Length: 446
Ligand code: GDP
Image (cartoon, rainbow, N blue to C red; front, side):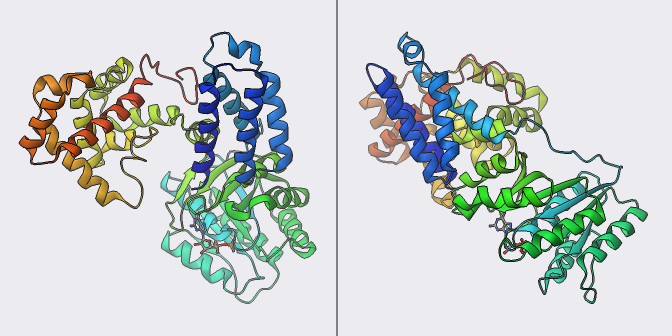
């Protein structure tokens, strides 16, 4: 995902700023310009970037920054808050309640992933015990009903549509009525998309909305539409009362900044993102963890949730203790490698930390990464207990490295590489020193 590049650029700009000897207005401005450039490159709308820049300038006073504060952190926090502000319209969307009928209408341009997303949305709720149903009110595109039927059948979700009827309003009303009778609690109406925004599309959407009285209208947007996102989202919002946004194809090469623009245009929150073509490639969207990850700050709230969710209760205190001590040893690295190879629960937890698995196990290179990790583990098997339990990388002098290389049948170069990896991970781990267990989305642990 190209949004990752945006995070990288922002982090680099902050790093450069904190490397400067004197932080004055000029340095802060340069840093902000750099961040703005990165946001523009990610397709965030120009006006939003300009507003954000002005807001941060107001918040971050260079005189404050000079007074021995952690400058990078203050700026990072300001950037974090601004991005969250853009992505969080300040009011939650309508939340359907299980057991009580809710009608959800999906709108968006053709090809945005609307039909796929309807099924994903239904499937997501079905897994949680809901009784969803799908209505195909797209009579414009030949094959739309077949596609919905196929998806719905695969997911075992009841559906309604017609090959004969050409009036989408009639079909939508009939479908909704039928599923109300059947006591479905989530009636999802898929509407026609057309190729581009045109009057007929908006009129049809308005009529379907009038006939079905949806509790929530979800605007589906392809993340790759770039700078056009703002205008497109706004056009939809002006015709029907969009209450939430789902951004699709976040897995592709999209720059993703359009998601930010869509929220600003509709003043509605992003509730899910689509991360692939398959039914399960669908994630709940949470602003703070998303921005944390974007800025390479690690997904703290997600991380903690994951610990509680997947680490056996009796192992949680020990793991949290180790994290809060912040001291990283070779033995700990060995254990984490074991977990990563198994990709068991703790492996999943660690994959959420920046640098832990993205660099060690980059996507698409899993095989090579696994072989590398196994080589490291073979070398660690030749270490003494003192070496494994030491937190001091200086202990590993030349003669020890030579002994480990010989003992494991690897080259000294490889042992040096492993030590470099150790230092890198120790640095990440040390950031967790003194970690208080944050509540969901709480930033105080940073
Ligand atoms: P609609 O015309 O808006 O109903 O769009 P479709 O649901 O037919 O989707 C258009 C194409 O986008 C299909 O090939 C989908 O498989 C694909 N698609 C939908 N969502 C995603 C996603 O999140 N990621 C990826 N990679 N492809 C997606």
